[in-house]
Image (cartoon, rainbow, N blue to C red; front, side, top):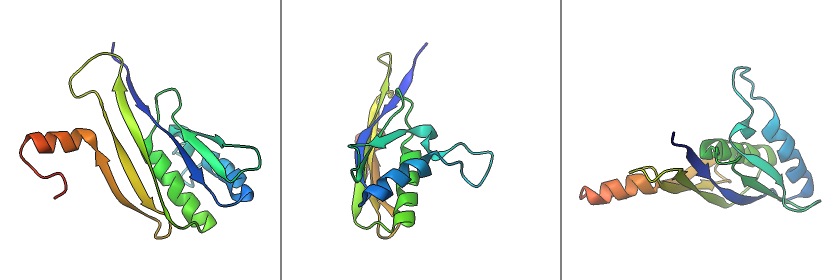
Length: 137
């Protein structure tokens, strides 16, 4: 049997210790739709240091969900009126050497505009390049 993993580890500055502490509660709240899991279903988060403004966001034993991280960061940007640019990267790995089972990506978020700016998937980039295309088109 093959196991697939998505790994990431990143820091997110919430600006104030109060925002950082409140963000941890926010990521564990259930969404308004009762049939959906909390945002933190796809990641773990903790304070980088007690009383600090930065939280550490990381995968849960290889089962991380970058989409949940992006959704959480955008929710924090809206809730705490954050500004600036933020981003993170992830790695996709596999327990056995299979073709197309490894890769990763990165995502950049504009906190001020409350939207995703750009993302890249290394698998998509490589496939496009090898097929003679332009991945930036």
